[in-house]
Image 1 (cartoon, one colour):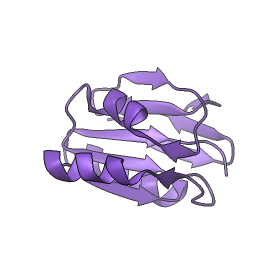
Image 2 (tube, one colour):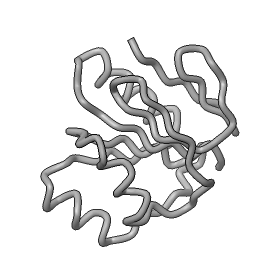
Image 3 (cartoon, rainbow, N blue to C red):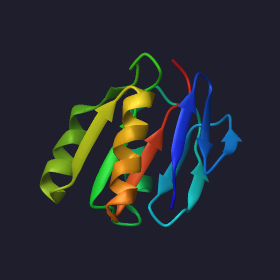
Length: 112
């Protein structure tokens, strides 16, 4: 089962450590993305390519990531729930989704 853990500046996926912002999907696919501090429509489009049922935004250790209003509008139109949390809580939510067999995507910001 896919499991995410976080620490400042890193993300561990099934015990392998990465130091980059990433997209992670329920099927284990990972994609490195440029560092970001704002979730915009371009990044959302990448996350939506695999048609997840839910999205978990790892908003950083301090919750510093912001979301453009149009992103929330697109998700509402598509009926996709987004969970926006500091990294430690976001990991718990994503891992619970994986344990429940949900099709969820994680947008992970490794910084503050």
